[in-house]
Length: 141
Image (cartoon, rainbow, N blue to C red; front, side, top):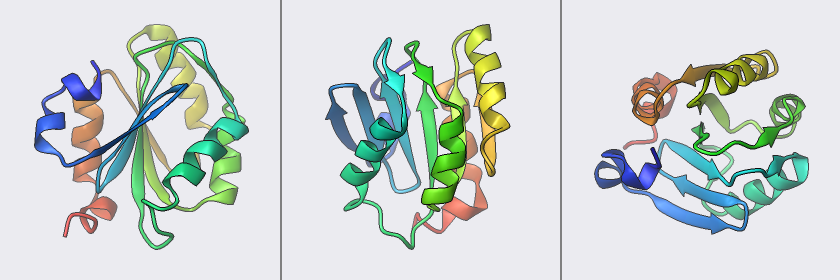
């Protein structure tokens, strides 16, 4: 299920940003990505995302990240290590997978991410988990 088709798109204030490689939604607590089929997520793509959101995300705020993998694409697990070293804005991440293979891939990624990474079977599960994180509740006020 896409974010815009979920109940949360009506409940949460968000900004949608469209890229040639997919859509990203920014809320006060977290970012949701829905990337296109067949793309390859590498450091260059992640850097483009970060630079685009640098004006929306200040250095002193902590956010969560949800990868809503409604499409199949490749991802370099090493990116989690690079991201942890270069940026310190994520408190947690959730990966929503819709297949057993995707779930296995996210299990591999979990080993590379230094912070909490939850593997989810639905977007609702990921959003509800993010909204319950104490570290992100300070963003609501």
